[in-house]
Image 1 (cartoon, rainbow, N blue to C red):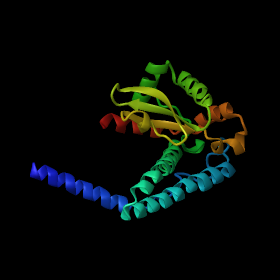
Image 2 (image 1 turned 30 degrees about the horizontal axis):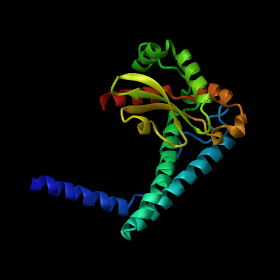
Image 3 (image 1 turned 60 degrees about the vertical axis):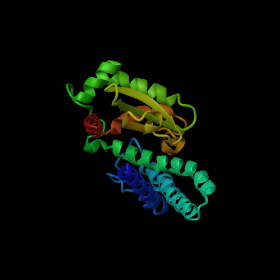
Image 4 (image 1 turned 120 degrees about the vertical axis):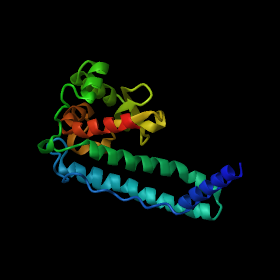
Length: 228
C-alpha cells in the first residue's frame, strides 16, 4: 500500500511539474510545398490557412499554456481553470490541422489514388458503405450539412473494429466523442479552409478534396489503429 501511495504521489508531482513547465508547441513544416495541392487548393489559400490560421492556434496555445503555468505556480486555481477551455480549443485547432495536412498529398505524389481492392481499408469501406464512391458521397453530403464550423471524419472504432463517419464541431476531436475512435481521415470545413478558392460552395470544395486525399496514409493509420 505504501508503495502504491508513493507511486501515486510521484505521478501527481510529475504531472504538476509538467503543467508548470509545458513544452512549447511548434508549427511543423508541411509535408509538401505550399502550392503543391493546386489546382484543388491554391497556394494563396494555403498561405492563409496554414501560414496564418494554423500558426495562430499554435501561438495562442503556447501563450495560454504559459499563462496557465504562471497561474498554477501562484496557486491561482480559478485562473488556471478559466484558461482550460482556451487551451482545449487552440490545442484541438493545432492537432486537427496537423492531422489534416498529413491526410493530403499532391496529385503528382499519389494524392487521390484509391486504395487497391483487397486492402483492409477498401474492404472495410465497401462493407460499410457499399463502395468507396458511395462512401465519398455519404461523407460529402453529411459534412456539407454541418451547421457552422467543424470537421468531417472517417474513424476506426477499436471496440467494434468497424469504420464510422463522425462530425466534430469547432475544434473538437474524435476522442472527445469516444475514446475508441481512431481518426483515419478528416476534411476541414471551417470557412477559412476553402473560402478564398471556393467562396460559399462548400459542397464543391468537398467534392474536389478527394483528388488530394492520401489514401496510403489513411491505410497506414488504419493498420496502426488495429494494433493499439
